[in-house]
Image (cartoon, rainbow, N blue to C red):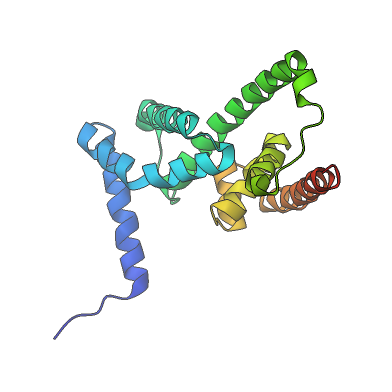
Amino acid sequence: MELEIPMGAQVTARCADERDLVERAKSDRRAFAELYHSHQSAIGGYIYRRIGDAHATEDLVADVFTIALQALPRYRQRGLPVRAWLYRIATNRVNRWVRRERYRRFKRLEMDCEDVGGAPVDAGLTREHTRAALLDLAPKFQTVLALHYLEGLPIREVATAIGCRVGTVKSRLARGRDALRQRLQSRRSSR
C-alpha cells in the first residue's frame, strides 16, 4: 500500500529542505552550487525578459549570484522563499543596468540622430517594439510589470521581491500598463 503525502506537507518539506540548503550554503560551496542550479534558470529568464539581451543576461545572472554569495552570511530566514530574495537582487541589478543602458542609448541617439529619423517600422518587429517600449518605462514600472506578467508572480510576491506594499504594487501595475499602452499606441500611429 502506497502512502499518500498531503500537498501542504510536500510544500512544507520543500521549504524546510530549502532552508537547510541555504544554511549549508553559507559555509559549503557545493550547497551554494545547488542553490544556483535550482534558481539560475528562473532568474535568467526574468532578466532576459526584462532586457532582451542574451549576453547581458549572462553577465547579470553571474552578478546576481555573486552578490547572493557575498550576502549569504547575512541572509536571515524569514519564512519567504529564497527565490524572492534572488528576484530582489536581480531587480536591483537590472534596474541599474537599464539606467546605464538608457544613458548609452541617449548618447548614441545624439551621435546618430540622422540615421534614426524616418526608418519605417517592420510589422515583424512587434515583440522588439514592445520590449523597447517596456525599457522606456521607469524602472519601478518595468519591475512590477515584468515580475507580475512575465514571471507570473502574484501581487503579494511582487511586493515581497521589491520591498513595497501590495497597494504600491497595484498602483504601479495600473500606471505602468497605462504608460506602456500609450507608448505602444504612439509607435503604431507613427508607422
